[in-house]
Image 1 (tube, rainbow, N blue to C red):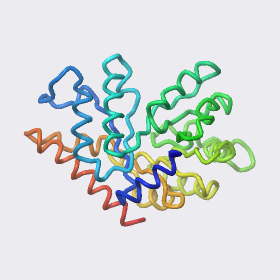
Image 2: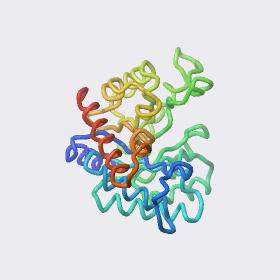
Image 3: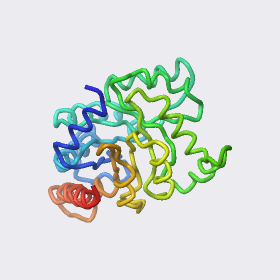
Length: 265
């Protein structure tokens, strides 16, 4: 099944557009975790607590780029799939030729990936050619420095992020989405007007304090899209004293975000 069809089915099943970011920062993992793969142990408990409210899981590759990390990621992906939840790897890949083909090999394991369009269409072709996978192209990101380049005017009264969005729509064979942050609601609306049919991955609603209403109103295309929270969910229980309370807090945070977003759907 193609990724966006699978995602649509998952959204319907869970009545949720929540993407849970699985970013197990080693400096923030609780002391009670044991075993040789604490990141996997952490993710497993988060998935147990949140899967009923998760349309998708989004591990960020930066937290897994060591030998034990890749093992933890593989275990995490398999476990999420066992719960019926697709996995989007937030890797922001984008490189030339054979390098890009090697990066695209991860789509044998995960269901979708984020990519960086800075090097142009040829750098993304190894990902775009995987018709059953989802490819989310960075357009207008949620970080403060996004304005440094993404808001530059590039002609025809368009800003760079708008041009990227239009080109991504041209590249799509039903397998392309965009990354557009909730911290810039006006830009989010502008991108939606340009590309009415592309689903968005909208980060920035949790710890970054982005606009939840705008994320839902402009992030979904035909009801399909994702609104992500990472730290706001997975570390919601940091003040809890016991293991069960720690992960119960993650489940509660995912459920609250689901309800909050559903107010605008």
